[in-house]
Image (cartoon, rainbow, N blue to C red):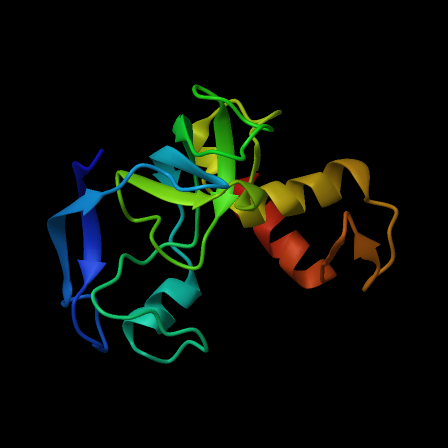
Length: 164
């Protein structure tokens, strides 16, 4: 089934955000291995601006909705998805598309939103990573592998200071 949603989309490469408009677009049901998520909170990051300017290494085809990380509620699941169900609150990353009411993402790109009590916190994946470092891995040395991801102490401290 196709439904109409609202999405902020970039229509032309531009040095500012003047090429972004609020559009009504259609979205299909999630495909195999995908989940459909109603976005509740989405962060704005430097790569989003770089994509709008055409300066990021990944260049989505125009028009595109910026936004690479968000939180929301699962509203539909595709076939071959068993680790999540409708109604679950999740955080997720995507190369782009999060500046939309709803989007389909690979079920592998989401994680349960356990431990986050405010969707605004869940919408910022970098916050969640740095908070985890601060809470559980504070004894790690600079450059150590943390939870399967390479972190720099500078970024973790920067994010922690921003959100505390």
